[in-house]
Image 1 (cartoon, rainbow, N blue to C red):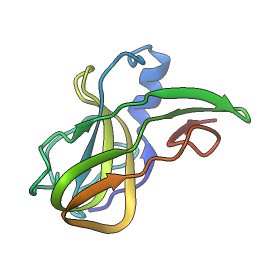
Image 2 (cartoon, one colour):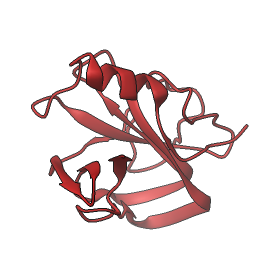
Image 3 (spheres, one colour):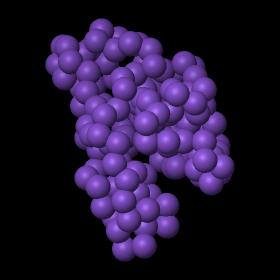
Length: 137
């Protein structure tokens, strides 16, 4: 099992098909090191999603939807996501579009297990620009 950082292949095609929109609800869910997520992921599922105090299955809604173009690379990013008073351990996450049948957008590996004990668990997302979270170029 492994989480591989990737924009999901299905999302790339769905963008061209006009499936996803800025007004949709995008979410971020956290997963254990037993999860298999990556370019081939097509939709959010609860398999190997984390369980713990302060975390609800499905994750949280992302705010701050922002797109742009920098140095010939189109990008999409969001504001940071956090869970307060959380006692959880996560290896990675999946961003998905809950407005469109939970279609997967991108998977991210944290590079190791990250733990929060009765504190705030935050996923720091990169700023808009050429190094933004999701890039197509």
